[in-house]
Every structure is written in structure tokens, then in C-alpha cells.
Length: 112
Length: 114
Image 1 (cartoon, rainbow over the protein chains, first blue to last red):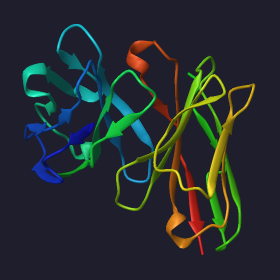
Image 2 (image 1 turned 180 degrees about the horizontal axis):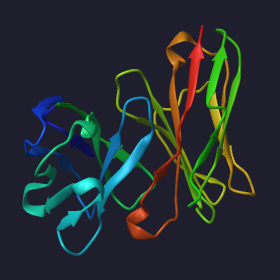
Image 3 (image 1 turned 60 degrees about the horizontal axis):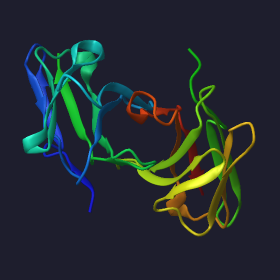
């Protein structure tokens, strides 16, 4: 069955610390991969996406993610987090169909 | 740029009542998705439509129905509401075949069932 796993449910960091959020997926075909961010009380916003080409993709607000096909992973990174990055982050997979599968989310809290 | 528009933004209903949520996709997008996000939970896929036909079905209760109209807007109809239906309902849209089928979310409709 298709699934997305986000291993860290809660992450607490100090400002300027580096961030890496794990995302692994289970899918037996070509996939499109996404990271969405949900700030408190707001809707899901697209951070970045991968569907072909360079496996290292850069998104908004200094985020990047690397697709490693052999590891079925699409980890999100940011070299230096800010207080304003406090939010919940969702990894999502789409296998070219109409259904997106979301991970359970990682709540990031950045301490000022 | 135009985004996905949802209405109403907030809705309070009593148990056993009916509610209708509306979604207007990004212009030229042909696919609409509905998601339900309970408090502290991840978004759960309910149903999607492509070119006005149901394209996929997720964990949508039988009490719920949805459709996509000729102008591509979609409505989610929820009947016999239960307390557990209280959630944030997201609509999203995409253009099939474009940019990896990236979906863009609306701001959601908060449904509270009392």
C-alpha cells in the first residue's frame, strides 16, 4: 500500500540551528514529491516539489529537499531556521493519479 | 495570482443538520480535491473530480457527497452531521499533467458541529 512516513513528529530548535525533516515513502512507481507547510491557523502552502530532473530542489524561504530514489526519501532541509519557521510540515506523494498521500506531519517549534 | 477560493470560511451547524461547502478552483485547473483535517491531524483525502467526473475516492463517509459543476467549481454536501465531522475542510485544485500535478490548497472551511 502507498504510504508516507515522517519520522519526527515534534522538533524543537533554537534560531539559527540547522533543520532536517525526514520523509520516506512507499510507492511502486514514478512519484511526484512535495513538502507543504501549515502555519498556525492557516492553510497548507506549497514549499517545494520534485517531479523530475535535479534531485536537489530548492523551495521558498530557504528550504530545500533532496530526492534519493534508492532510499525512497525526500528529506527537507534548511541551514538556519528562524522563529517564523514555526509551523507544521507535511510531506506528500502523488503517483501521477488524482490521490495525494500525506505524511502525518512534523510540528516544528523554533525558539527565539 | 488567483488562488483556490472556499466558502464559507466558517460554519456552525447542529447535529443532524446539513452543510454545503463550496470550492472555486484556480482558473484553468481541471481537478478538484477535498480533504478533511481534524484537530491536530493530517489532511485526509475525501474525494476528487477531474473534468466534472469523480476521479478518486478516499475516506469520504456515505453521508457526504460531492460534485463538480460545468464551471469547475465543486460542492461538498454533508448530511446528518455528527460531532466528529467538526474539522477544517480543504479544497485543492490542480491542472493534470502540469508541473507534476501540483495541487494548491484553499484556505479551508472550518466546520463546527454542536
